[in-house]
Length: 226
Image (cartoon, rainbow, N blue to C red):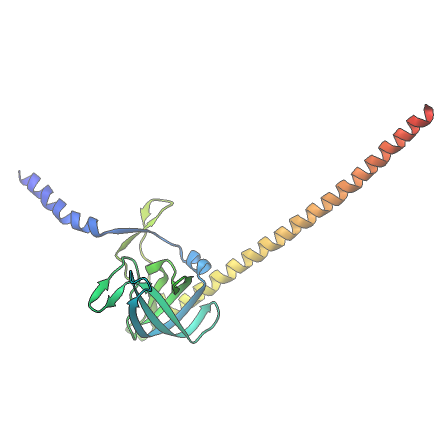
């Protein structure tokens, strides 16, 4: 009986945690850099929430004053649209959607949506910029309630460790440079393959022309004998 009671108590403790857990695919940093329409570092300076045109969903509009643009067209401000928020004491909350507060600094991976610019890969595209004890600006992933899973291995993934803002910027630039170098290499390889194909077609045409001439000569010789 004590063992059964202990097992029951353990299940009671585990069930609520399991019911609230959300599993998400862990997205590699390089993929986020590659897929993002823009990557910016800035401070949230204004925020408002309102119903969409159909009055079905509450949308929150967070305006950021951009300090640095790491990818995409430079701009002074950007307004990020996220689902959820509070209007007239009515609140909607979507699990996995990042939340911003005025005065906070963030590094954001941005994608375009029908409602406007939003965060790529939800919470995984949001990083907070905070100062450590020495005043060094650090970039850390947004706190998430989701369990990140490597779908290839089927194992849980630990969140990215905090890094300095300079290291974060360097990682973005290096990833963009590698992607650009890979893209250029693919273009050169494609051009080389196309040139080789054209050369092969030209050579085949010459061989075909010689074969046709030979066939005509043979036919003429045969006709002369008869």
